[in-house]
Image (cartoon, rainbow, N blue to C red; front, side, top):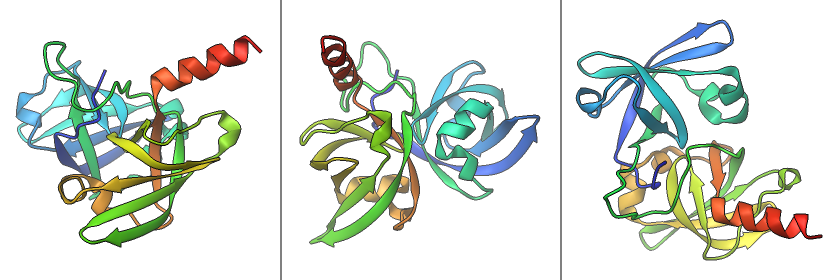
Length: 196
């Protein structure tokens, strides 16, 4: 379980295919504090630490993860948003994030407005996911509030701190992003569907 509050960035140092899996070596300031078997969110994808060194750690993404997220687009040098699992005795500063990506979306517009940015994303609404204005959304692991919501598209406002301390500053129109829709909203939607 995560909060969507990014702790730091990591840099991809090595990618090693292993059958249908991909071993990912990440350089990060978090490495000395991690342990094998811990969960870390990478662009919103919960992965388990399988090996450690002084400044790097290794995680493994299986085919299912690679098929449903943007991790298959990583290359050596890519920058990823990182967050360790939440502590139960800490404040929940973002929102409840599972680290289970629902689908990949695409950045369709970026607009700078007096020092902040508005990012618009589109996604395939065939999967049944929805957003609502002022609702929560996770983009590449970042907990955000939806500013504008329409069918298969939504916008978020990014303050300078978030822009500088996440990989939002590397987004361009056409960038693929991992989307995790609000878990409470997903349950409500499912209950309504079941009641017809």
